[in-house]
Length: 329
Image (cartoon, rainbow, N blue to C red):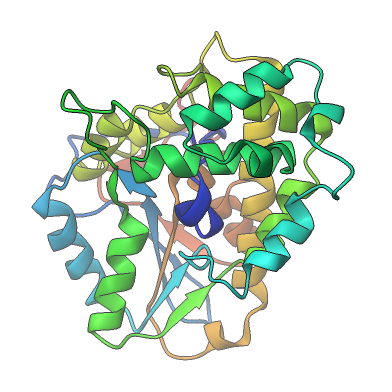
C-alpha cells in the first residue's frame, strides 16, 4: 500500500496502486545503482526521477550508498511534502480532520461499531475520546502512524516496539541537509489534508476499517515492504511495478477505490507542481523523489511529464515493447 509522505510520516501510511506507464521488459537488473528515470526537455533542467519507499523494514547500507551517489548528481532535492507536522500546522490538520464538539465519528460510519472503533483506538495506543472526534480518514492516518512508529504493544517477542526504519525520503533529506542542497516540496500539508477530506465517505470508512484490521495481522492489500525494498535494491523496475500495482483479490472495492483516489490525486498535484514551479527553470539536474506508485499507470507522473514535453529515459535494462501500453498485453 502506498505510504503517504509528510503528514503521514508524522501520523500515518496509505496505499500503493496504479497501472503501467509503458510496456516494458527487463534484462537482468543492475544491482549497483538505484532505479532512476531521467526526464529532459529543451530549456529546462534535467530531472532525475527516483521511486521511493516511505518506510523501510530493514536498514541496508547499500541504500544510503546509492542515495548518496544519486544525490551527488543533483543541484536540488524535491520531495512529495514536508516530513513532519509541527505545532503550527496541527490546528490546520484538525480543522480539516476533526468533528465539532457535538459530533463524532459514530454518526458517520455504518460498518464500524462504537466498540470496534474503541478497540481500534486502544490497539493503536490512541486516546479514545480524541479518536472519536477524528474523521475516518484522519483516524486511519493516526492508526498507521502508530504502526509505523512501533507504538503497538507486543510487536516483538519481548514486548518492545519494532518501528519501521527511516524511508528513502527521510534519508535523502538528511543527505541534502548535510550537503546544504536546496529542498523543494511538491505538496503542502494543507493540500494533502484537502485531498483526504475530499475522499468519498464510503471510501474513507473502508480505508479506516482496513487500517484497523491491519492492527492484528496483514490486512487485504497490505504491501510487502521487504519484497519492495529488495526490488528497489535490485533496481528491478518490473518487480517494483508488480508489487505496487497487483491488486489483492481479498481487498474490497471501496478500499481499492480509496487507494486509487490517493495515488491519482497525489500524482496530479505533484505533476502540476513540477510543470508550474518557476525554480525548475533554473540550474539542474534536479532529483525528484516520490512514491513508487506514482511511476506506473496511464495517468502516471511519467506520462504527465511526457505530455508536458519531457523525454523520459528509463533505468538501464528497461526496454519499451511494441504493444505500447502493458507488459501483460
